[in-house]
Length: 153
Image (cartoon, rainbow, N blue to C red):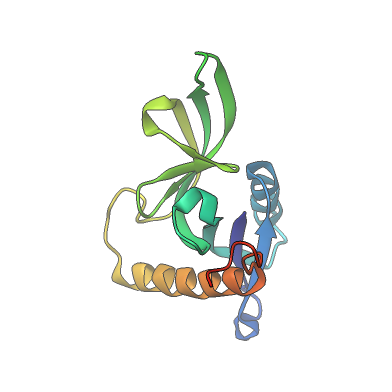
């Protein structure tokens, strides 16, 4: 699940709205909507909410997406898959509902990239990304409580 922080640039005092998208295609549709000449909104952060089954912990984790790409992936049967993928701040790569082995990426065309995607350090941006990750992680865990059978005793 992708969480997008959107700000109203005409009225910044309104704060940031969090928009949820469930797939790379829906994220790209949002990018196109924000890119219109008459749009008064801007994306200030994109995060991937990673469920426990994909992150190895009992809770959801929201991690900043530094790069969204249209990728060609090699599958187990040597077939290829044309899809969207997300390179995270931790360097991990995901596609919709799956972790991706970087060795399986045959091609990557960036569609969205933060200014620190190539490792350049911007302390203000990193502070914002860290804060946003903490806030979104808390929000996602508040509404995605573990099932009773999965909850620790």
